[in-house]
Amino acid sequence: MSRGVLAVDRVVAFLLGLALLLGGLAAIAWWAQKLYLVWPAVPPVLRLLALRAAVEAGWWAPTSGVVGVIAIVLGLWWLIAHLPRRGVGTLALPGAGGRGGLRLDPDAAVAAAADVLAQAPGVRSASGSMRDDRGELVALIDATIEPTADLGAVAAAAERVSAELGHVLSLPAARCRVELSVARRGRQLARAG
Amino acid sequence: MTSHRPQHAAAPHPGHGTGAGAPPMDAPGTAGAAGPSGAGGAGAQDSGATARTRAGDWEPMPAATLPTRSGPIGVVGPVLAVLLILAGLVVLRDALVGYRVVRGPAWIPLGIGAADGLAPGTAFLVGGIVAALIGLWLLYVAMRRRVRSRAVVRARTGIYLAPGDIARLASAAAEDVGGVITASSKARTRTVRTTVRTTGGAGIDQAVLDAVHQRLDVLDPAPRVTVVARGPSGRSRS
Image (cartoon, rainbow over all chains, first blue to last red):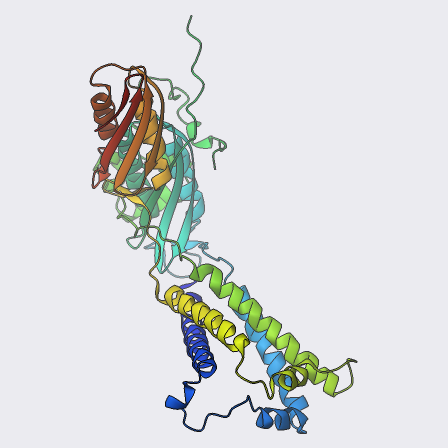
């Protein structure tokens, strides 16, 4: 889900909300017989003569056909645009310009870094991938830690992994996000003796 | 996410199991060795000297912005899109009825006919109130900020924890205190409330408070901790 489609969502929700609010208030005012205060010529009953004439007119069928198709196509595009597409393809390595330059699969590098983090004490498992998150190139590592883990030690391990990953990627624009989640239960204790 | 991935990164360091005394991260360039071949080589080509420095000399990557969720607008958007598609289908159906491709009465003229001539009855009051409330809610959703519900761990790179995970850490810390039978916690990004059942004994709530504080010390800012202890002699708070 990109920022653009979220902006469309917000604008449409705002306009529809405004229309519903004003329409609703108008309906309440009409019921309370106060609508003449803003609309002096308010009719005593709902009159839809113009709409009735429109649906009888000859241009109604072709127009509604075109409008219907446009609405369906726009709606489908809008719906599909919400599907998350946050992955990143291969990236060119700096200093390897031109044709046949070296390219890096950042997902593999981040996944390898996550595997290294998974070896740290207190970390149960970790996985990683490269994301395009709202315009930021983010190396995302999801790590599950033990409930008894020393958070400081985990943070230090994550810093080291981040440093190594930054060196491997050598992309100044890349940023790092380690999301820690805590396992529900600690590991079964080994039986002593 | 909780399942173990294949640990192919561990292959170059067979001696560094989790139980081994040596920290498994002491070898420089471990990620480079495990990463795709060519990545490390290109870095060395770029600046030959840095490849030989130790991992500790490299700067961690800068922190990404706080992870956010879009909030209710992420659900409202697709719902509005589906409503637009449904409206388009109704309009298209009426057009096809006009061309006699689809049989049956057109729906839009039926609706207009039903609404025409209505007097301002109770239906308008109820409908107006419902429409105004939905409209207000849509305005609120449209203008609401993104949801940021992550605590930050003090580090030179971006490390984040969700409130529920903070609560689990707090409970585990409390259960490590002698005399505590069970512990449960509720947390937000800046406050933690731990409830413990204890066997009783003086100062146990203070010990729990210290343990939870110490465990969550690395959070930035350190959360405010409240401990409620329930023992045989009643309830205490600190």
